[in-house]
Amino acid sequence: MKVFFAFFIGILFVFSTAAQPAWQAKLDSDVRFYQTTDFGVLLAGTDKDLYAVDGQTGSIVWRRKTGRINATGVTPVPGTDLVLLTRDLGDRSRLEAVDLMSGATIWQSDKVKGDVMQLAADPENDLIAVVLVKDANGRSGSELKRKPIVHVFKLSTGDEVWKREMDGAIEMMPAHFGDDKEVAFTLDNYRAPLMIDSRLFLFYEGATSYDARTGKEKEREKFKINENGLALTEADPVIDDTHIYMSGRGRVRAVNRRTGEVDWKADDLGVTPEMALVGQTLIVRTGGQFTRVKDGEIESKGPYGISAIDTSGGSTLWRFKGADKGLTNFVLGDANTIWIADRDDLISIDARSGKRIDKFKHNIDRAQFVLINEGGRPVVGGSEEMAAFERGGHEAWRVRHKPPGRGVLRIVGGLALRAAALYFRYGGVATAGFGLASGGLNLANTINSFRWSGLRTRFGSFDLTTLASNSAQGYLSPRIYTYGSIARNPGLLSRISGLEIRQPGFSSVAPSRADVEDSVFDRLDPARQADKLADYLLRRKRLAELRANYMYFYTDLEKPFSKKGLVGVNVQNGTDSRFVLVSDPDAEFVTDEQLGLLYSSDGGKLQAFSILNK
Image 1 (cartoon, rainbow, N blue to C red):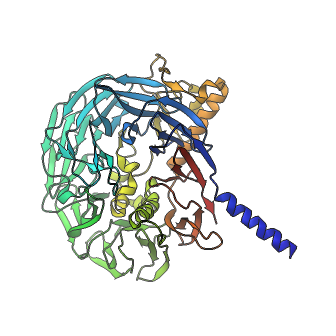
Image 2 (cartoon, one colour):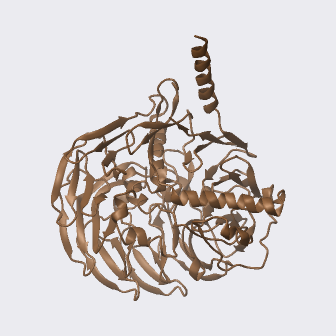
Image 3 (tube, rainbow, N blue to C red):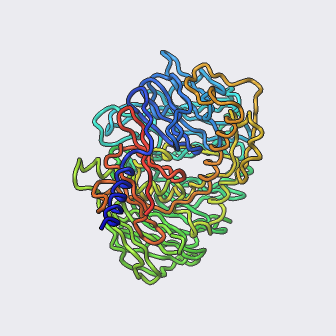
């Protein structure tokens, strides 16, 4: 009896301890926003300052006096150690490239107005294109149109190369839905710019390409991007050795990477939100489920189907139209098998002929995605339920976790959606099946172009179908370009194996630390500074190797927890394998799978909660 009592007390101690934050950082005022970075450092803004917080310990890495800034004013440059910071200074604005590790200013430009909404960078050619919009605030649910301005700078110095204002105002998307108050608006409803082969492609008023060095317009095709007010109805570009494949106005175009000319067009496809390359065949999805720009609700739009296009000339090899009740994303079970789901059925298609192989009921309420786990099983799911199947329709496992019954329905639903969406931040769909896809999915990691869109941080605002079709491109490259503290510590290059560190455009001019306060680097000797930088690089390396295994559900946890929290279901076997004891996370909560923590804010506190393994 005494042994049992001691064991019971021990279990209670573990649960009560786990319910407390692993750490909390008290900032100077209410946390207005925060976001993770690829180095395990969080960026958090208040009404007064911008903070960099160590994601593992909660210690302040540095702090800058910025005044009140929006989340759209802080933009990490992917593939680098830089953060772009935009600030309004009275009647003018300033854009700064800041070293993520130290907070020091690498360069600044006073030739801009507005916040950076999206960007494309080509470090090998020392170029970065930023898309800015000014006065991008309004009430959620209202229509807001603004005219974006594109600036191209030298990435190492901030010298402006050229700029271009879009011809007309375009529709923007709220950063948050459901709040009857002023919120920031974004360009998340458009694909991010792409810079490749010294050309810049923009996707706001159709598809336009420019010479990245001169700004000379190469080609333009105008069409309505947000079809019927829906976000991301056109596919992200797909790339192979010779062409860039882009969709728009119901057709797919093959743009020659050498000449910039359109070599062929495939017409009359319909709305085309997803494409992937398998050898010399381009697999295209038409129709599906989309997020409404106005209110964030999910809407289905057809016609629904899957097509295969021969990339050598653009001829349509086959079309499958057997999904007539909505459509999820598609995944590749193997080189010859495509899986899709509609409202009722899970369907497999022969990728060579377009003929249906199998079709059976999945019984998932409001199915939004399909993925392939490491066992090669298709998994169908939504924000509350998930099931895996064997070929022939046998159910391998099924889980269901309903959101808590208490609280405001829309808020609880939003938290449940964000919990499920966490899986797709780490290339979750791109498992064994998608590894068979060549060209566009793999080649994108070998080119020296990096892109950023708010979809990476505001993913909880999008339907799971959109996130699933995008997550196949969610891999991080093992290459990083450094401009700040890392570049000034050459000894780090040999300390982290498996991470390719490049130092383009290194300047002998010391970065400005005039605006930096409370920097941890001011309190460390050079040897310990190098150790800390190496730790952040190691986190970046581990993140590049990370693949998602857990789909999270916000729910009422069963005994012995008996409280609201998150349960992480292993997509490989369907078991409840992880738990996070956080009853009321804020709407922007996010996990760091590499560090095993969930982040949430509470007033002026930024908190981290441990992810418990069963």
